[in-house]
Image (cartoon, rainbow, N blue to C red; front, side, top):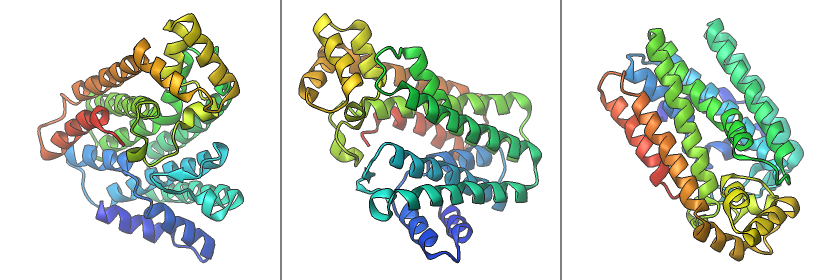
Length: 309
């Protein structure tokens, strides 16, 4: 991971001072680097090492960071990981444009890798993430969004880059198709588990440790699984509250809605869904040979649903 940070700093260097400032802000923001870590762990578990792994891991992180810069502008967020967002510090225009710079730098680096299949996977993943962002935008303030539509957004917006990260680790190791398919299944499942937990944590009372604004999803009128469950399975009063929360946004009835999350079983259901995905992710790793890297991947499955940040 230290080598990855070295590559990130080296590749983000620009003659434009503002780009360097925002890039340094992103590096120091304290992110988990989960997606590049996934690529590195899978690659090492299957016998691939060295500079190509770090270069591809940096590409993954650039794509992810670009989506965060754009997301925070769209969501009007001013806090991420307990720190001011780039748009809060530098303005929306700067965040959008530096996000574009990160995308273009990632594609420059893809060309240097010189493997058409790598370019195809990453370009397809980037396109799907953008589709997921648009789908989420269309779902905002829509109380008719059901679990299927919600899971589609997760698949596109979050899980796809996790899946691509794990798959690229297998490709770097020239793994046979069955092993590559196993890593894809793992990435997709673990990415889904992480997103479900993010949505659970937004209502579960661990806001301080998450380092984000309290009740962001509720305030934005975002139909995530806990609210969807409340609409579909809550009492008549709870359903009405959840619909109003999605349609209007805001946190006027936050305490009442949070209490309903507990009594209705919405939080328990969301947590159980995340645990199901994490368990499936661990099962997908069975074909990989035993190693400290596989052990770390399995530990990540446990961590994904035990975390409180």
